[in-house]
Image 1: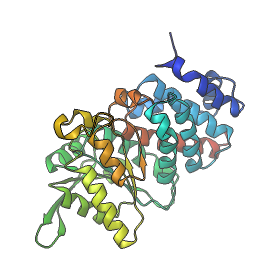
Image 2: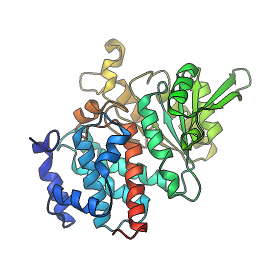
Image 3: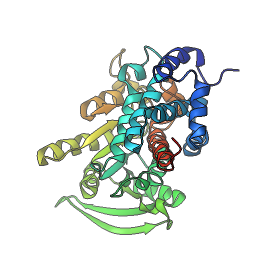
Image 4: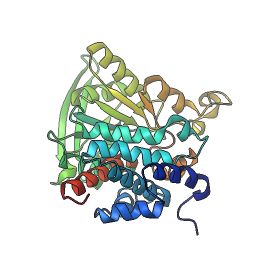
Length: 336
């Protein structure tokens, strides 16, 4: 049986990348990571248990490349991991065309550099996939940063935000937006755990204006939009409006659109966006994003269909950071 999904369509370019670093095969890549004391396979599975086999192997290849390149800083390891992810992109696919693997590596690098202070998962409503990504970052990134990275979830609906906070141990922050003055007030705050997860602030907004105000309140530097729920009525407009206001204020803000493609499932009469289009979410992502990924923020099969790997874009952000930090820890321990 093949080692992972669509093995035949991927292995030639994977081997070409491995060979360029003096690694003979994917099995040797696994040995390199294990010799450094890493268990990449289970680390990735632990972040999104429903991810495909190819996701675990893509991160294994990425970690081996990082070790071969002598990446001793997590930020540099993240960029190298991106090369591994890119090698898994099926030639001619959307993910290949957009260089999504490299994009994930560069996003991970950004989150591990001190310039980025706050990262937001900008969701249609708070989701488990955003939570999986946030947990991966919250539990790992600050092991290697001098100043802790703040991670927030910002979605539509206060009830959903509270439920996700309670299930995952985040801190629920309830806000109230004054539509006459444009002022945002915090009216209730509750941490649902005492550990690292409690450092993740989880917000629910009643509309786009409140969502934008939440972004300003936290001073978000980098965000990734979810795609499948409420994309046209919340997260893409929030990212676009916040982007415009950041430009007016001279503030740097890097916006990532998690993909596109799911827009075809929105009401086709007004969301199909033309017979050649990937749909409205894809189109809206192009309007505000500095980088556009491919496929769902949460559903592994959808990201696989886009030619990348079987793992949601949000959990992938967490996996990139977690594996990159593990590489730095191995370097610090003198394992390579």
